[in-house]
View (cartoon, rainbow, N blue to C red):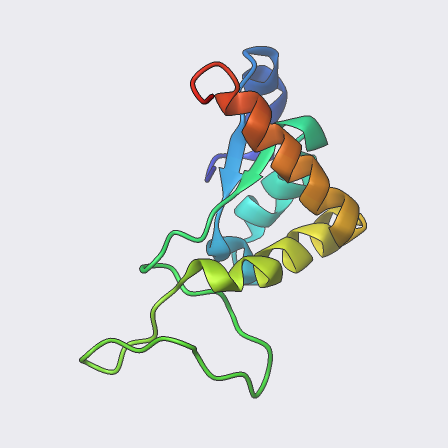
Length: 114
């Protein structure tokens, strides 16, 4: 989701889920970070947007994957960093938030997956 936090209540009323990716690890993404904090916990999802959008890595951490041109690649292995960022933005425990996001994904796909 890259919309504003003002749209969150309207979209929530329409039963929308909100998916966030590594752009919210960038402190300059004020709109995305504000929206991520405003989404109800039961409508929240995350993704890696691999291989395109890299997270901001902690100081000193090197990227795990590099392409042939030397560009760092995003990958699902960075999702714990995404979860930590999201938990900090929302003032929530990352372990509880991880379980909530897991439950949300299962709820979203419950009618289409065995």
